[in-house]
Image 1 (tube, rainbow, N blue to C red):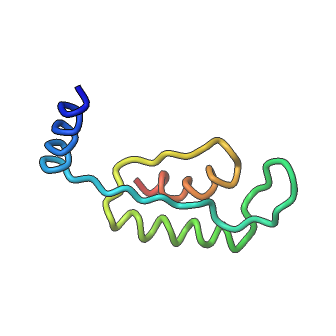
Image 2: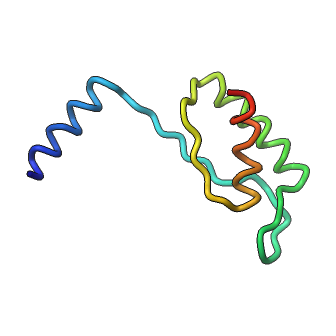
Length: 79
């Protein structure tokens, strides 16, 4: 079964190449809890959206923290 899974994965990658882009949340001021992005973080999230949109991003995944959602939101809005 493991060999069959490996073969299927190799075939999938050859037929449908995929690139994954992992991004950590943008800048925030720290502190406990669930802090939002600061002004620099919001600007960086907008920059990320411009770059990633041109790269043809087809899916966006995020955790549910405020800073990660705020990082992903500009790209999601641009799609």
